[in-house]
Image (cartoon, rainbow, N blue to C red; front, side, top):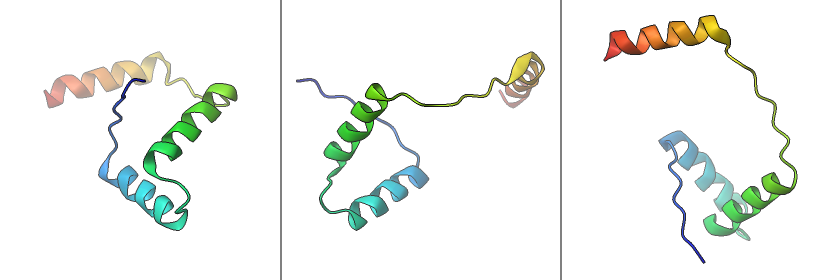
Length: 66
């Protein structure tokens, strides 16, 4: 059995902790396992492309920041 790591923002971590407090039958490991396996079995997700123009603008913004 392998171990995996997931990074969460402070906001995400607070939401997860709030959920776990309200649902004590879950610990983090069970929540993560349930969510991942559910997604694998039923991967319904809608993604929106950003388009070429938006991508060029984002790359320009990065070069200005760096």
